Image 1 (cartoon, helix red, strand yellow):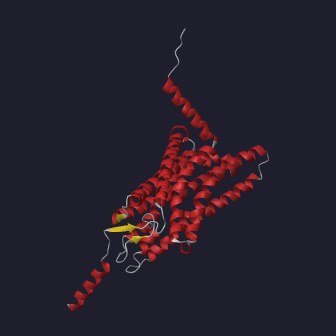
Image 2 (cartoon, helix red, strand yellow):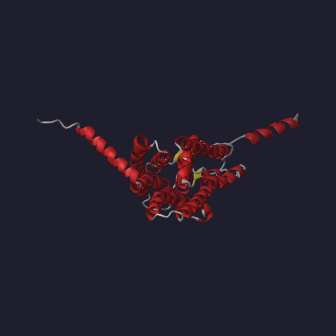
Image 3 (tube, helix red, strand yellow):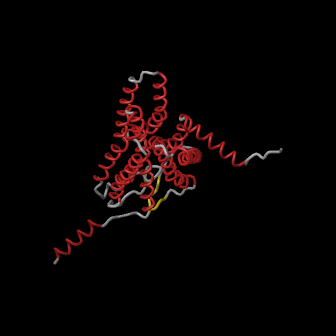
Length: 330
């Protein structure tokens, strides 16, 4: 009887999970006048919302029926969602001193910030695929890249992003937090969060996912995009007419700029995570999280002639409707 009681108590202790009522987001530490940086982030957020809204309107009403711009629309939508999941809460915490966040809100914040961040990466892969087929297999473009196939690719990317993120979030719900509740980041970041449970939980599954997810979402896509552009460069040498070669290169510049400003800082941060000071890492990731969504629509609108022409047509159409038909005075 005593043995059974002791076994029951042991099982009860093992299955007990300690979940704190709240976490504390530390943000930046020891940096003077840091509130000006948060004001800067808020301005970037407003600009990002404005330009991405224009991007979405142009994609829906003018260009959405072309496969490439289905992905462009999804990129703009993802940018709006990612910055909205991150910046308003960040400003509420650090400008108004509300740095405590409940356990449930923390996991929700983690999930949405990362799922939209993952989708930004997958969108760039889809756009790279579009450019690859358009330049390397132009005669088969309309067969391989149709509206249906583009919706299928984007749908699969959303499912995959949610799936690979639900796994680490599920692992976090199995952790016990019996020590510190201070998260050394500017949001409920997965790495700083699961490390808080190290003294009293097995964090190996979370550790594995912290290496696996960046490989699936950042490193492998970077390699695939580089490989696609190697094929594109090879195809460009087979184009005999200089004007056709120039046009093909011009269609890739916008995407290459987006790839560089998105993947370069993120890959450097994750690869050198242990060697980068906390504040430097936070600044790097926070700037990437807000600047990239702001720059995406600006780069596409400025670099893509179709968007500029469509914007002019839309403005003329709105102006004509506002003025109304001119009545004859005769």
